[in-house]
Length: 220
Ligand code: DC
Image: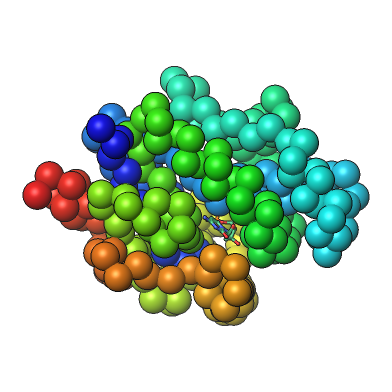
């Protein structure tokens, strides 16, 4: 029997990670953050001084990289060639550079393989941009999480504030619009809503409400 997959796609800042983690916890599923995999490869390229425009070297690098996503009592950790990079992949530099890596098809194919293999052993909540459209078009439940740009910028601003960083809300909005464009307009595996996906606009909804909505779709 095919393991159950809940695919959660949507733009940056729509709340995918927070919601996907909680849904996975509630249902006892494995949580998989595919963005972390693209980020980990970007971090490696930056640390090894490989230009993000050098596709050949980046593909070679990706073939020789081990990425592991660990879910345990320590929380959720991302290992790059055995080293914990969970925090290092969240910097602005990595966020800005990841779209180069994400637009290279052979690299996406390497990551798709890792992502698909997980289903052989686990029921999964997987979040990203192309989970319902490319990785698991046969996922039993597909969700497209969205929120308007102003709301997503506000959430990011508050997140930064919690980390002691005073952000500029207009600059954050601009950056979100630019990332949206890059995710939606690329020719390889762009962010699209699969026709089977349930669209949830989380603007004005609490995290708990979104989680409950997804769990109720799973149960029904
Ligand atoms: O979800 P995130 O912001 O951590 O994703 C980081 C980058 O990776 C973002 O630029 C989009 C890209 N990405 C992708 O192309 N495909 C995925 N399945 C997940 C993320």
